Image (cartoon, rainbow, N blue to C red):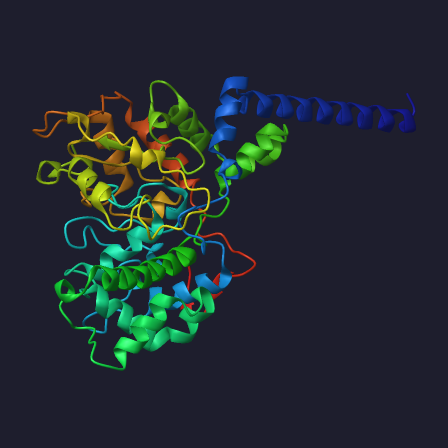
Length: 418
C-alpha cells in the first residue's frame, strides 16, 4: 500500500470512528432526555409560556402603564405611612426578590409580590380575592403603614394628585374629597361620623389606590428559567442544548418532582408551580394560626371583594367567591401553596418562616411529621438523601429573577430590581 492510500485509509478510519462516537453521544443524550408523551405534556404544562395572560376584571386599570407608574410611586413612597418611613418596599424589598428576607414580619413570613397577579387568592390565608384588594390591607394595619382610610386617601391626593387624576380622572368622589379638604372636613375626622354616602366616596378613592398598586405589581413577573429552556429543547429534540440547561442531577430531580413517588406536582403544578389552593402541612407552630379557616369570613365580608361596588364591572365572574367552601377541618391551619419559581431567592420558607434552608423544607416533607396537629395533607415520601439533593438541585433551575419588560426593564425610577 503506497503512502497516499495509507493516509486515506487512516483518515477514513478516523472519520468513521468520530461518526460512530458522535452517533453514540447523540443516542446517549436522546436516552438521557427521553420522556413519555404524558410526561412531555406535563413538562409543557409547567412551562412559563402556558401561563394565561394576567387579568383582573375587577380592576379596569390593571393594563394601564400610567396606573402602573402611579402605583410604582406609591409602592416605594414612605409618605404613605403613619411614621413617614414605611413604604410597601420596606417589607417587599427588590434586593430580596420583593420579600423581606426575614422569617416573619408581624406574625407571618412576607411572600413575594413577584407573580402574585397570577393568583386569585392573596396572602398566605387568602383573605383577599384580588391583588388590588390585598394592597389595601397593609395601609390600615396598625403593624404596617398604620393609617386610617381617610389618612391614606388624603396623603395620596396631597402628594400624588396629578398622578391620580392622570389615571382615574376628576371623579365625583375626588371632587367631593378635595372640597372637604379645603373646608371643615378633616381627614382625621372619626370614620363613624361620616354618612354612608361619604364613606362610599372615601372607599372609592381608597380602592383606586389599591388598583394603582396592583397595576404596578402585576408587571413584576418571573423571567424564563433554565427549566423552561430545557423543556423547549426537549420538545424540539435538541438534546445537546437540553444538556446545557439541566445537568444530570437536576434532570433526575425533575423526574422525582413529577413522579408519583415524589408527588410534588400534586400541589406545585401549572406554570407558576402552584395550584393556588390551600393545604395543611403541619409545619412547626402552625397550631397557633388558623390559616384559611379564619380568613374565609374576612374575604366574604370584605368591602373590597369581587362582589363589592368598588370592583369594576367588566365581565366579572365571582364564582370563586360565590361558591367558596366555608367549612371543613381541612381548612384549619391550611395555607396557600406558594410558587416555586425563584424559590431559591425567597428564604426563609413556609408561612411562618420555620425553615432557613430549602434542604430543611425537603427533609420535612420527606418525613411529614404531624407536630401535634390533627390534620396534615402530607405523607412521608421515604426518599433517599441523594434524591432530596437532586430535588433541591432541580429547584435551583427555576431561578430566573424578574422578567424585563419593554416598559419597565430591569430598572425603573430610582429603585433597582435585582
